[in-house]
Image (tube, rainbow, N blue to C red; front, side, top):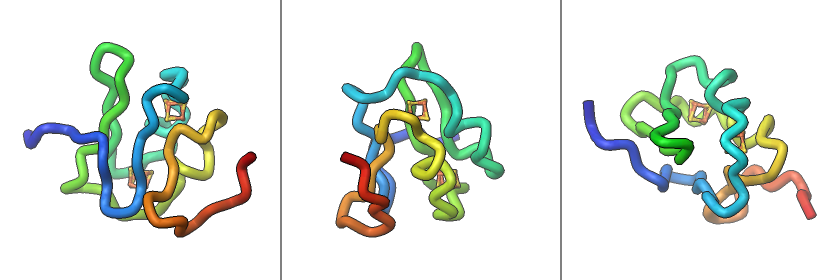
Amino acid sequence: MTGPTRKHPFLEILHERCISCAACIAVCEPESLVLHDLTLAFSSETCTSCVECFRVCPTAAVVPIKGRYYRGIG
Ligand code: SF4
Ligand code: SF4
C-alpha cells in the first residue's frame, strides 16, 4: 500500500476544517480515503476523481486546488 497523502490532482484536504465525520469515506466507492488517527488522507492510486467527497463534506474540508468544481461555499 502506498502512503496516503493530503494532496490529490485537483482536491486538497484542509485538516483545520475536517471534523473526522467520515462522510467522505462513506461515499468513496474505490475506498481512496482513509482516516489515520482522525487525520484524513487520500490514497490517490485508486481515486476516480468522482468528487463525491467534495460534494458531501459538511465543512468544506475537501476543496478544489485550482477552483474547479467550486460550489460557492462561503
Ligand atoms: S474524488 Fe471520488 S474516488 Fe476520489 S477520493 Fe473523492 S470520493 Fe473517492
Ligand atoms: S466529509 Fe469532510 S469533515 Fe468529514 S471526514 Fe471527510 S473531509 Fe473531514
